[in-house]
Image (tube, rainbow, N blue to C red; front, side, top):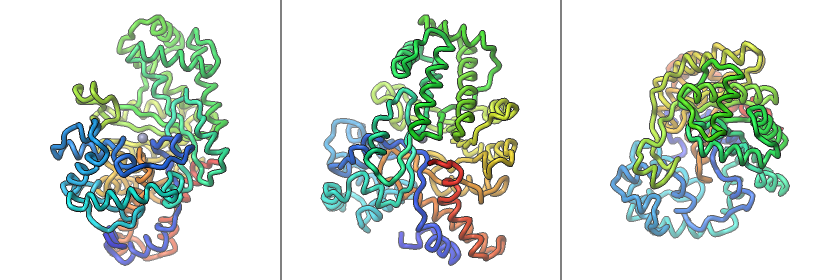
Length: 463
Ligand SMILES: [Zn+2]
């Protein structure tokens, strides 16, 4: 992993070093806690900043035969790090191997490979640095040359930490993003009702009907907007676009508020209505909407009961994507209320499907209004990124792509942008060497800079 890591041609090397490397990072979707930025948290050790909350690493450790005690359990931080270090050599050819060493190199200047014999030395060296002020959360973000970060927040969140960050004058833009999954999670009657009660409280709206519910949601959407939010995000198996009437939705809402479980059909109608209404809200305030489609979540009941969601129990699903997605987008588009939209698929089988679906709803109002999102989650690796960019190139406009995001829960994940940029430059470099695109460094350099930064900056148009 020298300076030309992943860059197989002279053109790729030139594009990366002269154009991509200097671009700031525009991280428009991630899961890092704004609290840590507000408090400018100082991590005590590498286990805390690296292993807590990172289900990619837990999955690798479990696959390597490591007991759960060392992944999410009560082992000490050093024991957890040691088990991770023992696992790293076994991650060869998995992106974790590259990410791990890029992160050690870029943030800590460590060139050694992590394994059981280097574990203690690397642990001590990194921890000593982490405990200095230069390695506070904000300084780590500065070190990575980050321009903007969008977190992921629930509509009932008071955004207190975002306000504190803003008031502190931190020069990196830290913006909230609206993730209203719980406002349509009607599978669990009790949890949904508790959520509606909380929503009533924070919005100061008495929710005794569906219209009260929508008034409260709308108020929160405005509140998020007032706090700089311009972006929503939805985690869905697939788009939901059943037909429904207003009366049906009002009755469904009353039924669940009365403590009664909904039928499957009622759930689908309610969710279809909410998804559409969220789309209308996003359009009305000029936001971008994101859809993360295709995860089959919480597959292991045994571990789920022990650990809860987002703990590495998810995989790629095979849902019907095209027809409901088309119906959903078309309904909004028919009324000229389709917001800028980014679609992410988890099943690589759907790459061409998504790349062609976005073409249906490009309307000439904004370059790249409909976006095919960067390789997501299991596809966030060299092969997945190349396939996503090839599908987008073949069926749409790669040059208008808003590029990479970390989608991470760790403050050390920014080298994933570097990994993406190298992969992008390498793809273009290979095309030049093959004589398929011109060796026009001005044209190519601009395209690379746009995909790394300027496209996202212009597209989201945050203040
Ligand atoms: Zn995410």
